[in-house]
Length: 150
Image (cartoon, rainbow, N blue to C red; front, side, top):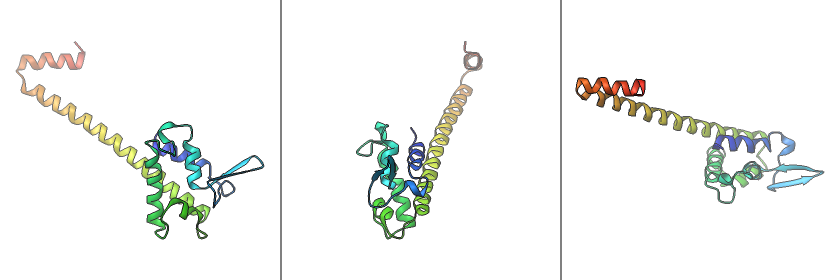
């Protein structure tokens, strides 16, 4: 699962004000669970070992992206929990933080894809340049191998 997908899944746990809480990671009343921002990240990644909140390798990215947004937009808070639980924090503010973290994750993922495609293109150009440095008869044979798969 991509980081942006994990964040979007986590977002679904608190996407309306009645699903969001302060002061607890999760509460359940009358069969309905409510989550804070950290609790939502935990719930959204619980089934994926890469994003296990307590040490999966992807979890650091999830929390770092959210924390970066908290510290940028709300610098008086020192943690995701303090932001979520602050009397001034609204559900809309939590959603803005999470949406910005998703946007950043998607941008990072797009950059990784562009980088991989650019590296592949460079490899193709280098192969073409190498082909053009060979003798004419070798060019014809190499071109046939590349284009026809001979």
